[in-house]
Length: 501
Image (cartoon, rainbow, N blue to C red; front, side, top):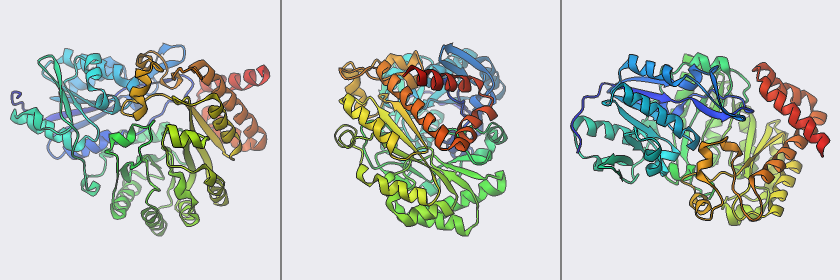
């Protein structure tokens, strides 16, 4: 039981971002916060502070290959002081962001101990005790999907009612962490208002134009979700558990209504479907794409989060994708070894069907990118090499090879920690994307060398096979964004690596 508290104003903060110095700095609309704001704004005065995009040009080095960009913590607290909220919610999507969230909480409590601090995201949702330990000024954690639980928390605080009745909540009580299970989800996604994009600095995103996975056909692009969740249980992934191990779809009519608003209100020209399973229900996907064609939206669109590969065997589906504006697909292979897919990560994918998928995409002039992960626990060197061979020969325009990082909430996370394959502290000390497991078969340095070799070979082939795409789409985008640090690193990696071998 807590004392009743009057709540009138809520500030939601997307914090400064920690990223590798080599990568482009992304400027993506925080869809989760804007959905949350859209639900709460009918009862409270809301402000979204996207510290990452508003301070996009402000960089602070952490070490030689890792930096933070966004508003400074002093600037953030000045905005909090001006708005004078009773509640401050801070997004914490990735583990690497937890120290940033903790510092914001600390500064908020220095401003006023009466301000309630709340966070959500994968790390806090799955590791609440660890999060409270690292962020002692944090009051509450909303686990997983936040719209229902955040409302319940606010009502409980206003009424002074027991917190044990709030679904999917963690909090500190008498020096201990208390928690309730996550049991309730938004069953009808159509009931949610559209994201409160009017509370975001939309023109800033359009001007910067560095969306998720970096590429766009038009600067007026937005993050977009027509579904939530995934019914599969890939062992390396935490997203399936975060969204309740199932997929929920918005109706096609509801999706089209939001598309109309985006075109009419924000003059949007491109959609980024940042969801796990746009293509899983092929009937629904075809209905949506046909409607987009009939309405003559003329959007460009892609799926930067990856696509369900087996659906792309359907020639009609791929044709409708192209006709409705799809220009690029990222195939989430994860591994080029069927044994790894079947026995280690349990991903429902048949690599023998890959050739047909590639042909369908090529026949419709859709660019083909792909995701791969190497360094899974239990993976052998030979299996890793098979993934690299597959990535080189399958016929991609571009491939992304990541080193496996155990994600909190995934089936492999605790296994890696208990066997000593991975030190969870590394994520707070270095570039998240350069940390990896160490087993008897491989170590991070070895994986990094193989990864670099693949990048060199891929760029070398693309340079000679399609120089227009190499300089126009890849090197050109870095030049247009004046990312000279990335250009320098790319050229050094390419030429030094090439002559070294």
